Length: 335
Image (cartoon, rainbow, N blue to C red; front, side):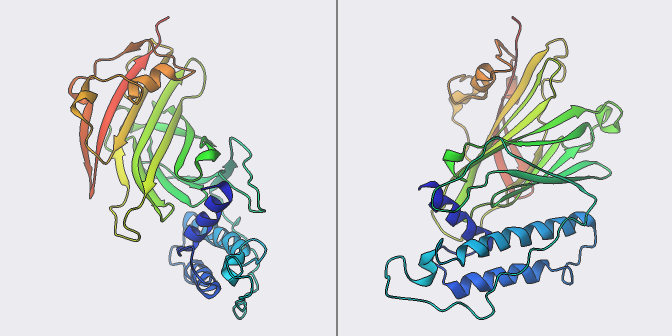
């Protein structure tokens, strides 16, 4: 699927409809999002919820502006395969004015690793937009990348450094999403000595409807005086049964297993999570698709020593209705 078609499908996913939807169905879906997120219907008075509602409206408006444009989406007007056919513009279909969602004092930012634009007049945006707020247990970070939206709950054991950078490869479309966040340990937090919550809880709020999430990889690294970085990468596959009910992708875990290697300036923890149980050989396997190899090949860590993980190498994690398998590796550089 080329970049243009990938972006068009993502716009339909934003509105929660199938790419074969008619113009009237596109308009109805757009109006429904505006109605559900209008401030008169938003029962959550906090600034963070208002900010999120504004982001949904902005994304829906972008989708409507493109999908209702006959030059960008002729299929909605019946002109893609049948030039002689036409559809009437829905009544009152003029695009709504842009909503102002900047009336919040929660911190927000846009970050992008590369400029990715496609042919055909439809821009491909893989920018990471985010906002965050602190609560009694840590920091909640809301990250949006195209039709992906995730909520991260970072324990107060760590400080969020207001840094989220998109690391996805635009050639993968929206099937793989990757981003990194800058964090630092917070020794003053009560969680540092007596932890009561997971270091990170990840919740996927929305993602392309035609995809199923199959796994996630995390890489936490400390390299000299550089800012410690945590990278999350999600992998997917095409959904075999469209619109079937799926278990929400939400679970919590500890991502820093190399904290006691303080004498090593270059060290890291890599974890690979999957919905399928890993084969038995993964308990000792260090080949190309292992977390050990990620640590060895990372250009910053370049690990030449690996810790013996013992029975912590492979774990079955249960978080609510979500069951995932984790394969972990800890490595560091000696030379």
